Amino acid sequence: MIRVLLAEDMHMLRGALVALLDLEPDIEVVAEVSSGDAVLAHARKHAPDVAVLDIDLPGKDGLSVAAELHEALPSCRTLILTNLGRPGMVRRALDVKVNGFMLKDSPAEKLANAVRDVAAGRRVIDSELALAAWESQDCPLGARELETLRLVAEGHGVEEIAAELFLSPGTVRNYLTTAVTKLDARNRVDAIRIAREADWL
Image 1: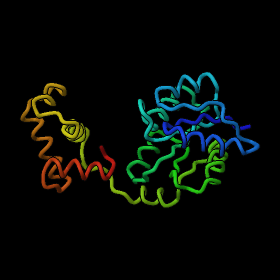
Image 2: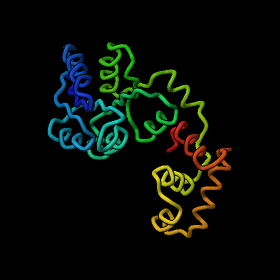
Image 3: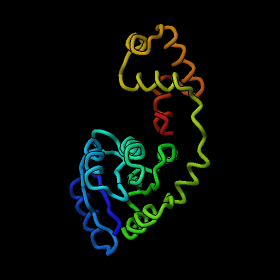
């Protein structure tokens, strides 16, 4: 019997997924949670073979939870569900060693098969998503450029960013100018848009 923990914040969808998986003779949903913060405690308590995680959980997001589970409970495999299949997201999922990545609009029977495959140690990633991730370009921005752009996107000013990162305001402006140039953007707002669409932020 494959033991599954399901994390999904939309109650109706979570109920439907639990009902769908419980119809399978070899799969048992042993825990269901609505936030990322609750996953690790329930995983420790119920020892699931597979954690099926919505990528957009409140609290900790699905990818952060997957990384946490990988460290704390390496025997628990992870399958990410998402509405959006952007290539950058797939690459981030692979970076945190998730075992599967599926779109929520996949046919229902694919979920049970994906759970079985992940439980058996196989990777499950939609072929079109995998190809898009393979062909997508790497982020041209360095860590500091990304960090300053992310803080601007969150509404922080140059002085605030400088204080937070222990940099001079001039250095922060230089990082932001470099980010705009590397992304071939019109301005900072355009650079943020480009980085978000590529899922680099």
